[in-house]
Structures are given as structure tokens and as C-alpha cells.
Length: 480
Ligand code: NAP
Image 1: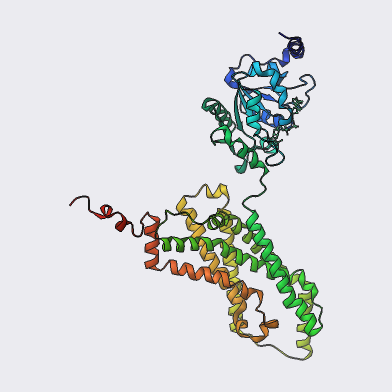
Image 2: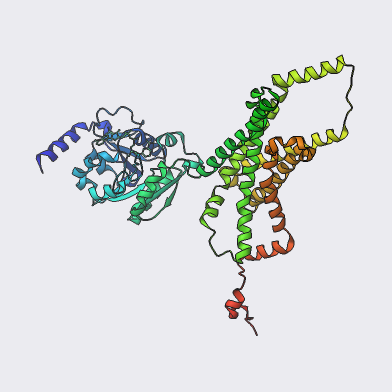
């Protein structure tokens, strides 16, 4: 034994007060060790204790560790390592070299590498691989790194229930999966240690599936905002010398929101329609869709939720119309001028019908919109069968698109034919936004016509066009 090892052992023995000794009553499988008493170590230790495990912390300063969860024990690293088979390493990768002198105590132990990095490719090898190279006698398992200290302390929500693990030893992974299950987490084995880098990159991703939909939403909002600004505010200033810039805050916003919402809802259903036509054209479902279509289909939920957000803003902006100063002013002014001129206006039944239908379709469309949003939440969609989910998202989704499109057509009403609508020869925003939903609805209509629908259904059940000619044996009856 070297002098350094002797002094380490001495310092560990010194740190062992009777209270701090590992509970010998618990079997080793019920005891878990956590190296590091920082944020993650503390939260993980707390959850492990709550799940019924005996927790032994390994710390550089076992005497002065003040923020440990009640019921945990704290020892020096070497003594703590001997108390359990499974050790969580809740220490930053930069400090992993402290494990090298502990190689003997860690031999045969399962080390769970929890570490993350600040950026992708920060180190030449994955942290878990680095850890394995430092302690070759141990079985390293990468995992739990996608959880946060905060979520562990607050109980896992749906999004935080899934943990990914990888490692070379199946036995070691089983031991980690058993702990995860007891903590109420669901562990997914992603394979060998070579996947560790991918798992370490997971927490660095910032809304990966929201990026494209967010860009589309921002791009559309900006484009339509400037388009409407020119058509209304600048047009009024240039042609009539009127300053109506105050309309930017509510009127313009209330035009941009429904436009973006309707276009994004169409973008949500367009890829499904395109995919159906592609399958029809190819006569098979066994060929991959192009990457751009795959990517587009994968972000339909985010497109839908963003479009719901814009629809919600449209509703809020519409509800505040009666309390706007400019509206109250014009209504009062109009009423006073009618009285002053001793005039009355005729009640127009057609306008009343149009206005009520327009509002009613908008309300129904928004109601279904909300239903689509609610059923896309994991906790709700998990409670539905696939058939129920696809009924809501596909059938009711297309119905929502139809109602919202009809709502917009009714808004336009007879203004489609009036030349004064086309300021500076440009169509208003609501007309532009009707193009895409109308195309999607027309294509969908084509797809549900019986002859096309029959072919699509057969293709989706595995039928392939031309397969009989390619392999004539397939078409021969089994019993002559
Ligand atoms: P932290 O709060 O900084 O705690 C790290 C702990 O490591 C310290 O409390 C200390 O415990 C120990 N330590 C520090 N320097 C050391 C050294 N030179 N030698 C040996 N031990 C040393 O960090 P953390 O937030 O808990 O994160 C720990 C690891 O988990 C990191 O790799 C991080 O990437 C990963 N992670 C963290 C979170 C999170 O939400 N915080 C989520 C996922 C993954 P003692 O003083 O007791 O020795």
C-alpha cells in the first residue's frame, strides 16, 4: 500500500462517524451510490431515497456536505464505492480524473455516466467512453443525462419520464433499467456505448422540431405584416393623406393572425395530401418519401399548435373590438349624425345572415381547432386508440380547415368582385391566404372520391401496382 493510499484510507476512516456509516441491513442491490453532492446528485439522491433505496453519497468533503437529502449517508469516494454495486457519477466530466486512483474499488461496479457537455463535439470522444477508458475494470452505462435536477426534484412530467441508456454490458444496463423503473421512469436501451455521444447531444437541442414551424410562422407574419402595412396604412397616407397608423396595433395584428393561422393549418394538412398523391403515382407504399416531405410530416403537430396559437390571438383581438377607442368613437359619431340628419337605416337581412354565418363558422372552426390542440397533448393522445386519434386529427382536422376557409370566404363575401378592394392592384391579405387552403381542400376532395379512395386504401394495405406482372406466381391461385 502506498503512502498516498494509506493517507486516503485514514481520511476516510476519520470521516466515518457512526451516523454516517452505510446501512449494512440493506442488501447491496437496494443500496445505490451517488458521486457528487451538487444539483443533480442531490435531486437524484432524493428521488432514490423516496423510491426506497439506501443512498450513499461519495464526496470530496464528506464532513462538510451540508445540502444532502434527509436519510442519505455521505462517505469519502473509496468507502462509498464499496457500499453499492451501482454508482451514479454526478460530477462534471472535467473532474473525472479523481476516479483513476479509485480503480481498484470500482472494479466490477456499474458506473452511470450522467454528464452532459456545453456544446456538440466539445471533446474528441463521448464522456462515457472517456470514463470507461479511465476505469477499464468498471461497466460504464450512459444514461439519465436527459433529465434535469429540477425535473427530478419536482417529479417527472410526461416529457421527462423517458430516459435513454446505452452501454456494452447487458447486465449493467439491466441494473440501471431496474433503478429507472423503480423511480417511475421509462428507460429505453439505445444500444452500445458508441451511441453515448448522440445521447449527450440530446440536451443540447433547442426545440429541434419547432425550428421549421417557427421559421415559417415568423416569415409569414413578417411578410403579411409589411404587405398589409403598405396596402392599408401607407396607401391611406399616400392617396388620402390620412394617418391611420394607430391601426397597426390591433387592426393589422388582427388581420395577420388569422391569415398566418389559416395558412399554417393548410400547411399542416398539405403534406398528408401530397404523400397520398405520391403513393398513388408510385403505386406502392413501400418506397420512402423524399426527405423534405418526411421532415415536413414530422413537424405537423408543431405547425398545428402554432396555427392554433395564431387563431387564439385572432379571437382575443376580435373580442376587444367593441372596447377600442376608435370603434366607440365611430359608432357614436355615426349614431349622432343619424339623429342630427333625422335619418334611419334599413335592416338588411342578407347582411345579417352573412354576418351571423361568418361568426358562427368562425366559432365552430375555433372550437374544433381547440379540440385538435387538446388531442395532440401526449396525456390525451395516449388515452385514445389509433383510430380515435386519426379520426380527430384527420377527419375533424380537415373539417376545421373547411370551416375556417368558409369563414374567410364569408368575410370576403361580395368584396371579391369589387374593384375598390384591389388597392394598388393588389388583392387583400385574406384573399391571398385562401389560395392554399382551397388547394388542399380540393386535393382532399379528389382523394376521397370513391375510385381514388379505393386505390389509396389498397396501396396502404400493401397492394403494389404491377406486382402481379413482376411476379406472376403471386397471382396464381394456391388451390388449382
Ligand atoms: P454541480 O452542481 O457542479 O455538482 C458537481 C459535484 O461534483 C460537486 O457538487 C462536487 O461534489 C463534485 N465535484 C466538483 N469538483 C470535483 C472534483 N474536482 N473532483 C471530484 N468531485 C468534484 O453539477 P451538477 O449540476 O450536479 O451536474 C453534475 C453532472 O451531471 C454534470 O456532468 C452535468 O453535466 C450532469 N447533468 C446535470 C444536470 C442538472 O440538471 N444539473 C442534468 C443532466 C446532467 P462534492 O463536493 O460532494 O465532491
